[in-house]
Each structure stands twice: as C-alpha cells, then as structure tokens.
Length: 365
View 1 (spheres, helix red, strand yellow):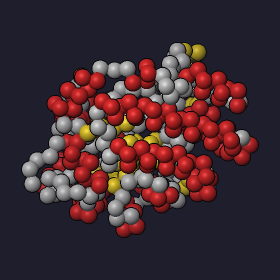
View 2 (cartoon, one colour):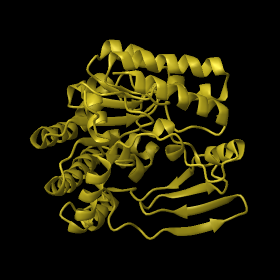
View 3 (spheres, rainbow, N blue to C red):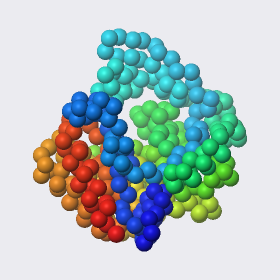
C-alpha cells in the first residue's frame, strides 16, 4: 500500500485497519527521565542528544494548546528552598517538595480542595466550561502544522482524567475517603470536569477534526485498582458514557486510557464504555501484553515492554524486542517500554533496542 502519514498510520494501527508499517518510537515508552537523558548524553558523547531526532522516531498526534483544568491557573510560588530541595505550589494549587536533581517524583504536601466549599469556589472561579479563554490559540497555525507534519489530532493529556484529576485536587487519601464520606461531591467533581472537557473538545472540533481522545487516570497499583469495580462503574462510567457519545457524534476513532500498575480489573469495564486503546501495561505490576491481546483481540495497545531490560543484558533487551515482534504480527499494537526510561538504563542498551525495534516496525507490512 502507499505510504501513510504518521497520523493515519497510528490511528489505523490502533483500530486494526491496514497499515504500511508499524508506528516507530511513538509514545512515552521511548521518552527518558531528565536524569536519564543526561546519562545518555554523557555515555554517547553527544552533548545535545535528542532521542527523537537521533533515531528518527515517528510523529503521531498533535495536541492543541488548550486548557482542560484550573483556568486561570494559580500563580506558581516557591515556598522554601534548601541546597537539596525546593518546596513550591504549582498552577494547579498543589504544594510539593521536589529534589533539585530531579532524581525522583515529588513529595505531595497539600492540595487545593479540602471541603465542599473549596470545591464550589474552585468550580465557579476556575473551572468554568464556558470560558472561551480555554481555547484561545492560533488555529490557522495549528492547521498549518497538521498539513506540514501529517499528525493526527489528540485532545486530552496528562494530568486530566475522571479519577486522575479529582485525585490531584484532593490528594489520593482524601479522595479515597471521600468516596465514602462525600460521594455526591465526588460525583459532582467527575461530572463537572467532564463537562469542562466536552465543552473544550466541542470548540476544538470546530477548528480541526479530532482523531484521539486521551484520558489520564493512573488509578491502579501493583495490587490492582485503587477503587472497586463497583465504584468504577457507579462513579466514573457515567462520565465515560458521555465521552463515548461525544466520540461517536464527532467520528473520533481512538479513545485511550493511561493507568499505571495492574489494570486487569479495569480493562473490561473501560472497554464496555467506549475505550479502545490503553497503555502502558507495566510489567513489574504483573501485566503481560500477550495475555491482554488474547483476552481483548480488538483492543489497541501501546507499551508493555519491560523498561528494566534496558538496565540488564543484551539478552534481556532481545527478549522484549521479540515480545514486540510477536505483538506486532497480531496488529493493533505500537511498541514501547512500559513507562518513561529510568536512569539505570544504559545508552548502549537503549540504542540497541531502538535499532532492533526499527527493524520490527519497518519489516511489518
């Protein structure tokens, strides 16, 4: 078949249509931590190393620069500094402590919503669906970019999700307690946030056709979902049904969810409510994408390769490349590691993995 644009290729791959080849280097499973990139630059001897340019990874989705959450954002504030740490509040109103060297995730200290009154105030002041400033950008320039690059259009991005955003507003412990103590507030948060996103997406759809809706949840750990399947259905799925209705009405072909950890309890529920692609399928949480392929033959999958192999031997990397080749033969799969590349990965292993994956992707017809 004739060569597809990068956007056509990745969308057709996820939905199981014919493709000229498998998308190469797409998604967060090829992106490094900042510390990792510095290690790679030192080990490779390439001071300005850019992995996507160096390996000619494919482009895939263009994301319009619209506002899905707190808007206007809170002014960022630095609250305390030490030689090792910085305590600051970000635009979402979350207070956190960061290592200066970027060597770990932040320590979360405080959140903008503690009470029903906090939520009502935030909803009325900074979460207005009708705020046209959310989509105020140069749409002519965005359409010109699409024409030049061939990218598909994605709406939704980290950190916006039906579970994920309330978690960031309340903190995970307060959110989980609130499912029991303040269930109507949690339902209202989820429904109102969904209304914000739908309003934004409607305005995007007036300017460019949407190919992909992404929902960020991160709602599972090594032991499975943070809330029960019953609660997922009761609290979250009415929102997912609204999203699925939007997707059908606007011809959106891919609806994806990102959740870390063991997602086995969640996938059948998400699939029943309009989701047709998921990632990243963390191996250390017990996920094997080959099992999911057998269980869900029409599910689009990205990732699922063990990032820990990049700190191991050449044989460890070969094992993951072989897994990717097996998945690619079945289709609806975009190869990638199961999250951002950590600092213990070596440049030699990463380079070898990228070179071998290029063979897998370009030999597939």
